[in-house]
Amino acid sequence: MKKKLLLTGASGFLGYHLLRVFANDWDIYGITNANEFDFTGAIPVKCDLTNYIELGNYFDDIEPDAVIHTAAIADANFCEQNKEVSHSVNVEASKNIAGICCDFQIPFVFTSTDLVFDGKKGMYTEEDEKNPLSVYGEQKAIAEDEILKIYPEATVYRLPIMFGYPQASPENYMHGFIKRLKQGEETTLFVDEYRSICGARSISEGIFKLMGKTSGIVHVAGRERLSRYDFGMKVVKVFDLNGGLIKQGSQKDVVNMAPRPADVSLNINKAMALGFYPMSADEELERIATEKYF
Image 1 (cartoon, rainbow, N blue to C red):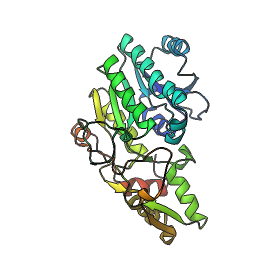
Image 2: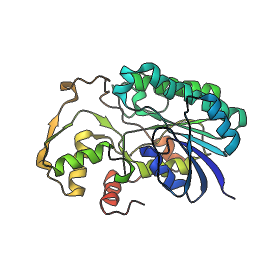
Image 3: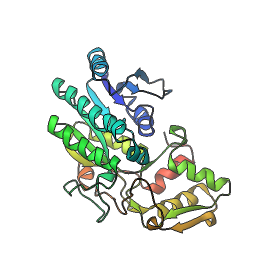
């Protein structure tokens, strides 16, 4: 019999890719709240993660062998304006899930973000000091600390901004970018905001490969430090778009409700030593463009 995986955020962008990577080896119970997902290899479970009693009942019913917690309110601007609502999901619900997993000694994976850093240095290691600039980054940083305090054997994967299969989410930034260029709209991309951008399939396969191999904090991201502009030009080349519509811009010239760090690229040496080796951005983009992603 296959082991049972409980996956929160199953209807989300990363959840879409995790479902497809894990489906052959696990029986998946995908928790969603407002949205639904359509995947025959998983059992959908409607649950409000902020309802501790309802959550505990599902754990009793399903008896999962492992839990991957990806659900979050990840809209940084929303978090700035709705601190209590986002805190209840991003921090309190995460603590509750960690506590249940600790009680039953269930392997627990929590997905965090590169936005726990202030962006002044770049190529951050797992040991570097956190100093988030936004409420979202702060909530993830708090959740990391609380989870590992409750359940030291848990694993926290810090992830970068991701791209992936178009069907996963029409709201993913890469697909919005492609749509604008196809419609002939000019687009400005920052030359001074750096991330370890990575494909969601590589991230999902990395989580699959590292499951059970480690605990604590691990950076799972791309091998390349890319600016928004660098990545945009890769997309233009692979998808044969009009690069003349892309204008170079500076992050410093744009005021956002949620402050954006300049360089939160991640050092992934620890993950690579454990066997994680992501595709390059070029290779992953090529697989998406040629419909060979899965």
